[in-house]
Image (cartoon, rainbow, N blue to C red; front, side, top):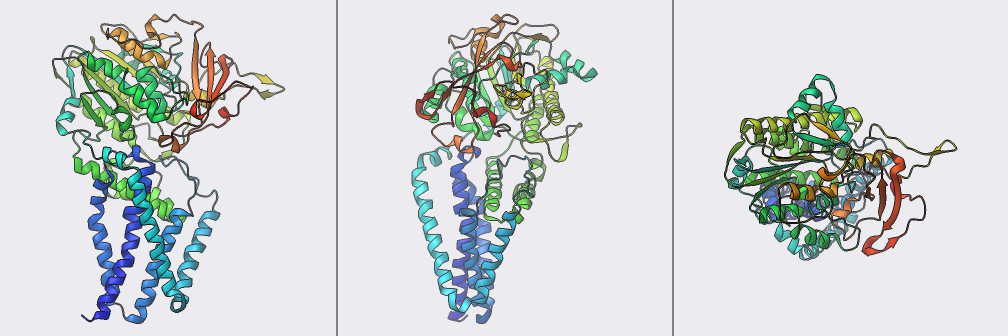
Length: 603
């Protein structure tokens, strides 16, 4: 092999390495750091899965470069360099806002000019270097290398700046031994706490009132009390979970991480149960793992899609997800639609077809099925089992048969009810297995949500009108987020499902559990069983506009506080309070706020 051939191969491999680095290393890292809580394994673990593909691609481009005649090779090399420049431009300059990539439909026809602009940029860029490769070839290659070196510098700087976070992601979360215990309950004393994310209160009431099936579901929940006038505290999971577990409200007074550390590592219902001798088992979505890690527990696991998922498979799934996001960022819009494919992501579907279709709903539903199919009551000590499940949360993907609908459906009342019903069916099967195992009657069971499901609540009243125009303080879709489900069964409680109009509040959860289980910890809030029907209780709600950056920023966007005196579903019960700005600044109520006007805020 002559030296010129070797030079062509080496140069081709170097230029191909730039493309490979953008696809598998640099862009994935920037996405990983910006969404670090969405991943359950370390960046380095996922990159290891890419190594064979990286080596193959670099070697293939190098071999092709070696085989090409010199007159063709020059064009080949400059095309590789130009592609590197275009990948840099696409991932850094041509970055459009597509909203949250959680399965909701993207309107690709809107702003269609983006596709044409990108096509023109890519086509003209590649055509330009092909036509003028003799005069601009060296400069194009030099620019490609310069941009790559700059990106490597940014990569190193960001790595150093996030070293502690990256190290934490390398910690082992769970083992197969702890997964065994997820299916084991106590033979004596159980708390089963199910957080059905996004399960709206009036949707639940519709389901249990829906004909013979509704009657059967009601009968399966014997001993439960459904709190119809229950009020949430935040519109989204991020701050609702700390409020549920600790009864503490975040008001933008301190950085979010500082608040989380203080609230969840000290006086929480998990810590109180753990200190009282309970085995505390937590099964949670991967994106929220960082939050639940802050407290004390016996077993902590992300939601497995089957009875056992190996560490290697978890890493492979994460790698496929990160690669999909990288390809989405690096591709022009004409290809983005194919990569996203309504949540049926290209790489995830290719390698995990059975598990990725339909997103989180089916994975969490499958876990519930594994739980009730493998349930045992083998543990002798008390057990607190907490399940945070994505059942009626976006995206809506289930049909009436509780199978994949074939596409992501619009988030409307009918689709939300259908998916919530499918999730409830699996929850009730768990209750039936608990009854067969003889542990249902003596258990404390909490079935609740953190927020509603974005569809205007049924029975909405009290919208004021002036000159034919609405003058409501808060609109129906935002009110829906304030209507999470709450149903509780106390140990020894029997009888048909009862409906209470007592004004319960999400801040009452920890106090209720501690009171019923006689834990030696006091929480803010009241036991819901001490509340009287139709009390004129003053409750609070804290609305803010969701931004993806809130998971990494120090503070939330401004928080609008509301006071609710009367029924939560009555618009006239809502009264504006102060606005809590970042770093503890507060604006007093100066009339109708514009904060509530942003609706359909997405998690």
